Image (tube, rainbow, N blue to C red; front, side, top):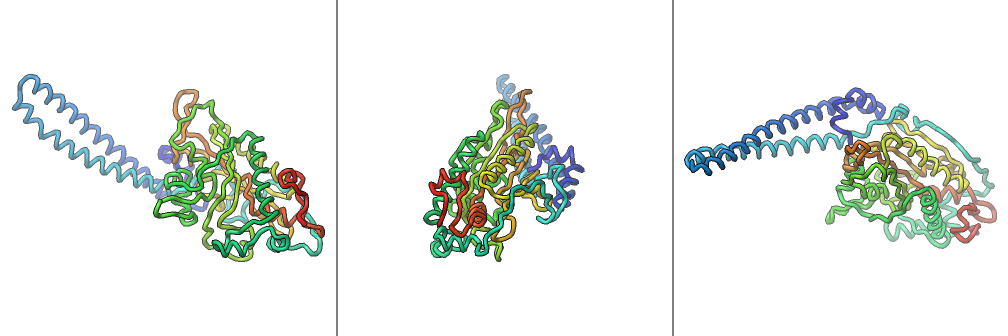
Length: 423
């Protein structure tokens, strides 16, 4: 979330940046400053009363030592009055701080200067397009038909067990899924990411820490009895590993990778664009997370983008990189690159990764700091990216590599699958 002191110092800059998201929040920012002024006033007035109370307490002690009991007893009424007044100030302070926090939770991150103007995905900027789009043979079909023909994925069985959006991977489909996970984790390790296996459920504090709450509350599966949430992405538990932590500057950057299933309600999603693997309620993903110094976080972002490019190149998939416009960016992001692969059978681009720099937005919520060379604590920058999300990668692999003889497996995956053709 935004820092109150930044709102005070850079009000006009923040208003201009938020306008890229098509938001006009000057009244909200002014209200936050107004409440913060009251917070400071309460603190100052409370401190005066507290100092007076401490002074009187010392006076009473001295009078007792001098045997002046009557004079000491005469002073006792004032500390009681001060205690009530200080208590009232504390109660008001809690109310004001809660109001500031609740308002800050409604404000998204400010976009980076390079974020293009725009309102929807059509306004995103294509940064790079690479790879040859395959020309399929005449009888080529979409991945949901391939999955049925070769017994790779049973969508109906998933509906029976759970409901739509929860597929069952079978046979070589299951092995290909496992191969992709292992491949992505191994590649992350080669790139310097330390693997972790986090919980797949998180508490409310973790959801607020990375910004999924309250913004995405309706999209998360909630277990009310335990007040826990199924994770929508490994970003949540992995980044929260560093909540309320003060790092030393020489620990940065911290790189972590994790494979997890991900759970999203995807409320309101329907139609042909969500058929098969295109949009699921449960899917597998390997995530990379970096905690870094503010001075080099954008260089780190480019390195993360290059890492995901390398994965797509090794999978021999045509891809493109988009810089998201202000209206299409996530709530917590300062700058996001989306990676899309081309689905030859569906004749459209499919998003398979988002790579984002959140700057200090998450770190401020998480109280994630590092001690700089000047020995002062400052907020770190957090970044994360999908490396990669499996469903649409699998869909594109199946569709783009279908031949009359079967489905060809890219060479990079053969050591993981143990087969080079699904027939």
